[in-house]
Length: 97
Ligand code: SF4
Image 1 (cartoon, rainbow, N blue to C red):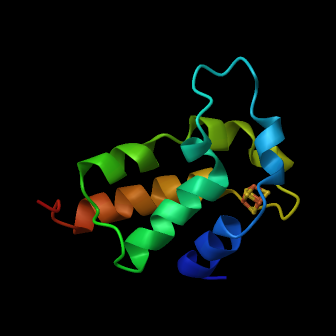
Image 2: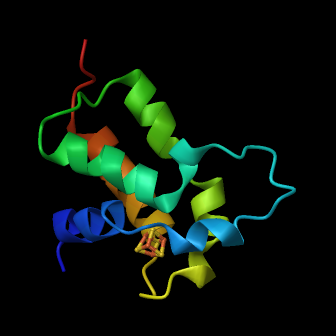
């Protein structure tokens, strides 16, 4: 599965791992679940979303996704994939204005 396929798969998943995000985690935002992060990354890959500062900030919020990683029934590490995507894009892309 390539990066786009990975994010597409997760973006279309009904998010069963979401229940494993610890209740005491400060942020409980739906936009920080693995599925939502994948949706954002997929939109960037497909050119539907600019890789601008707000998008970078949204993709940098992987704490919750890391916290529920073990609950993915497909054994996918979306949080690490997002971290890698963000790092690589940040190194290769000029910020959108
Ligand atoms: S991390 Fe796994 S369980 Fe969670 S939304 Fe993505 S594919 Fe589904």
